[in-house]
Image (tube, rainbow, N blue to C red; front, side):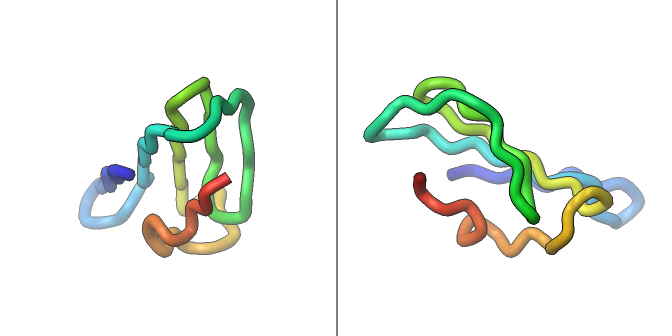
Length: 66
């Protein structure tokens, strides 16, 4: 999975992640305490906005394989 951190004035505004899915297709939107996910077939995209999250983003380990 690849992540990209978007910063403004030295502060993290958002973290965006993209993960290709290998085994099964998945469709829908998921929302957790750390990130929001958009699942479209063989690709899952994740968004973490610190202002709206209950927890800080701890890296790829926060995104579990489902």
